[in-house]
Image (cartoon, rainbow, N blue to C red; front, side, top):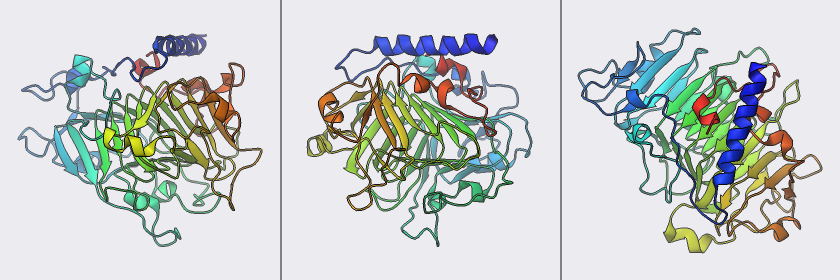
Length: 414
């Protein structure tokens, strides 16, 4: 009964939030997650208000336990214990890898949650940033997938093993060994930017984050790259709330399940599409795919907006089992009127199993007439019902449905 009450509460909260949107407006209410607001505040004692045992990372403070985020993570035992790491304001040039199974929470120092300031309510990706930046510069320029893998490039990787993190090639990707354990049960990051700065344009896959065989939630974070910004791999569950996700080519892609809520997708140009997904090869039925809900899709800045009008596809099928839905979201003039496209003229990767859909979106980039004449599915109140909320789509490593215990409850309640 308790689970049912929670699920109903989540659904009601989301409906109230959606109803509060003003049709034709580019804004949405800013509601940052305040779970760790006291700990994240900039104070003379950096650990004031933090959970007992919180580790402190800083490049300059004498109070720091570590100078590197990765060093702090490596110091944790490979067990089920939960740990919190507070990261001081600054830029950290490193790759961060989380392999342990127990919960890990990364907190970026920021006054925004305490002040009630939303990070995802952004008008541009050029000047918008958190106080904590994790930066790396790498791209996969080898199209064969045999010498390098996209996983090499990621600023942040949450996966139990190196094999689990690999993208691979072909319709099923890298053949992850069947005995691979599930990784982190509850990874969370708050008010941290992950930036892959390899080049100021698409130059091969350049991941900001990769999640596979793990659960990961991101709150008030930024993800910045140009190609393949966010990768959610096999058995990966990723939840993005009040975020900015910026890219140019297929910048939301993967095999697993991603839910983007009350966030801004910043289009740095229009090549490929916004989403590209493959069917996942599991032994149980699941609702893998990418879902963009109650969010905003806009040109990254005014200098490129005019050149992008009516050119940016919502998605294209990485294979014919692609699944993605944009629902209750604002779309500016950048969006291609037909919405989704096939992969290519000679290689469409599109058939009766392809699920590229929209529901109740709005704004100058949403053209219901054009959508109905394209490969895009327009869902009504009945057909959207199985996909209305995170609890509807996330699946556990053994096929159990409705597991959202790893998501910050405050974000689920709006």
